[in-house]
Image (cartoon, rainbow, N blue to C red; front, top):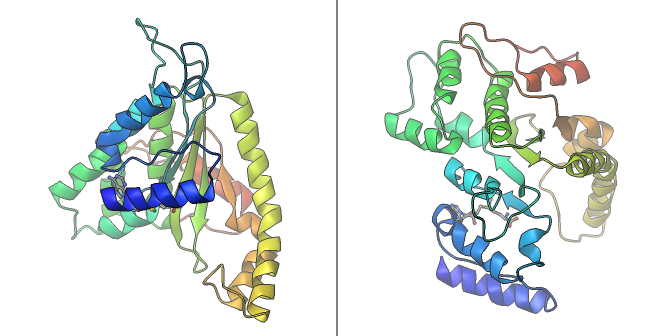
Length: 279
Ligand SMILES: C[S@@+](CC[C@H](N)C(=O)[O-])C[C@H]1O[C@@H](n2cnc3c(N)ncnc32)[C@H](O)[C@@H]1O
């Protein structure tokens, strides 16, 4: 919304006066090019931000991020056909894949089925109707439970590989009732990017217990709360940080409706937590 974008522009300018920040209003699926053009025009023919490492953080509320938008980011100036300029590395992507909204919006029983209109929205999210095989297998209860949602994560990661991303990984984000909210998917073609991601995850596991302690001290001093969770839940997170910051980095495998093997993502999960049954 233009008025919200204007508010954000002025609050960011106040908070970070030294930085060059641009807020663009409108549906990002339509206005993405305006943003990319802005970055391009911040630099010259041989140097500038358009040539450097670039990260796109895509944080949708629900199913609104269209695959075409991801494709346009992935292909930005990566073609050799008469480019005005070309980039050496693809834009790196950090995408919150909406596992939770998909679960809420796709009924999973033989008797209930998502409308064709809803399915078209999911087609646009994946850029292909292949997800429908997974959905049908869920509805027919060939695959079920929390793990069955990981097939969608693998499919999304496969789609990213097909765009040319060499490495993809997913971090699971769940609430304290153990329900998966979303998967944070990282895509890069850069060896260093992959290393940084693994290091960050290790760090997340170290930082999580420290954050819990800080939160408890704040509560003791009646300071503002950072988290909604109860003290008991915070203790649970602190006791097992590896479980709350989990990385899936095995290469994703395609879903075969005739032979639904475990997804790479769920396989890794079982290896790291053999005490949890898969189905
Ligand atoms: C999960 S929030 C992002 C939060 C943000 N990353 C932060 O840390 O504050 C998703 C935002 O995307 C906006 N949004 C939803 N659909 C959009 C679209 N098609 N284009 C641009 N923004 C959209 C929503 O209004 C909401 O503000």
